[in-house]
Amino acid sequence: MSTTRIPPHLAEPKLVYATQDASEAYITAVARGFHGDYTADHWELETKVFEWDRTFGFTVEDRWISTCGAFSRTMTVPGGAVPVAAVTIVTVAPSYRRRGLLNQMMRHQLEDVQNRGIEPVALLWASESLIYGRYGYGHATPRLQISGLTRSTSFRPSVTLGSGSTDEVTREEYVTAAAGLRDELLAQRPGSLNRTADWWNVNLYDPEAWRKGASALRFALHFGASGQVDGYASFRVGGDSDDDQLPGRQVVVGEVDAATPDAYAGLWRYLLDLDLVRSFRQYVAPLDEPLRHLVDDQRAIKSEILDGTYARLVDLPSALEARGYSRDVDTVIEVHDALLPANAGTFRLQTGSDGASVTRSTASPDLSLDTRELGASYLGGTSLESLHRAGLVQEHRPGAVTALAAALHWPIAPFCADFF
Image 1 (cartoon, rainbow, N blue to C red):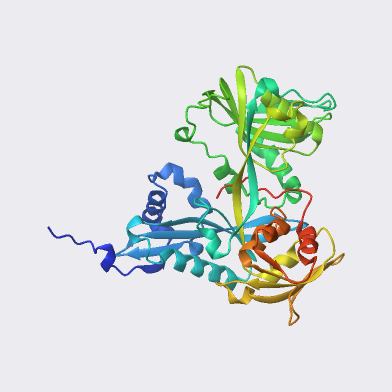
Image 2: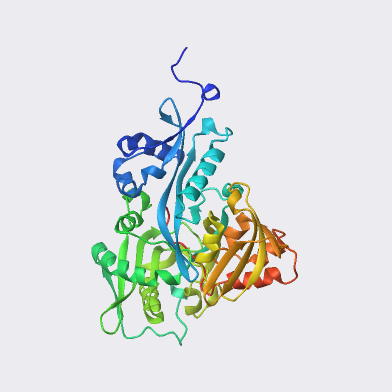
């Protein structure tokens, strides 16, 4: 029996950019790549943030067999912020794997980001963590998943809740208040991304099919003593947990942030004291989550470290000059970058009270590393010293790794709460 379709082994895929006018076929391929189905309602919000001049893939006879894209976002870095290319929707159809399509897309995208000259850093969430290291992405923002029994989470006697209060609010009230407060707090947390109105809509998209029997998203605001909003939280309540260690109804906590310790503690106390709830879980929390220090019983909070976003330096000098440093350092580093030759070579990094400068150098390097390791340590969340002990950073001058690791370290752990 004959067919008009070209068999994959005889096809010659072509790299093509997508267009908004023909978006349905492209997004159908994206959904299929993640083993889902295209539904117009689900993708309506996503397509509002798509940037079609950054959205491409390979086609065979006008059929998309791979996809790749990026969003233009701004990321907080230690002491500042940088534009980033937020890489997304990377898929390859099963029949076309082992053909080098992913390699070509990733190289094309990195070269495109570099040629734009706007974003010194690329960022992504990895659906499979073993893939992207080969393209220079290093794990930069670890995250915690925390859980526990609510009856075991009494706070230490020294914890104060202040004279404010917490109340449940509508989605509209929440976004109006939380968006402004989040913008004020954004500069404090390396790794976090700016969030426009469209990105707030994407972040809070809550179809019933995703709830797994739990309630719709609910929202709470904390009000300070004078009535001003100084904290916010999102959550949902599910039925009986399927975890034998966490029986009973469960509150699943989304975002929690606040301008003061009292507001932060007040929000958590509200969430943990909900009637009929016996356990809690938060899937995305920073490594330095304060809740673990608020509770009287340290064993009440179960923590699991998971991977978060992966960072890739695209313009090494600009990226290193954009961030602040915890101590002054003057060092020469040799960087290996197989995909972006402009990033490879020997550079002198000098930091001081007036900022950082990065220049090409002919001096002997104090240390050598791959761009992957530099990306991992860029936000201060992965210790360069730890990478050195793992044999991934080579030290040529005694003390060079320790000095640079101390400079890269930041007192607030990097964290990204936005999936993209």
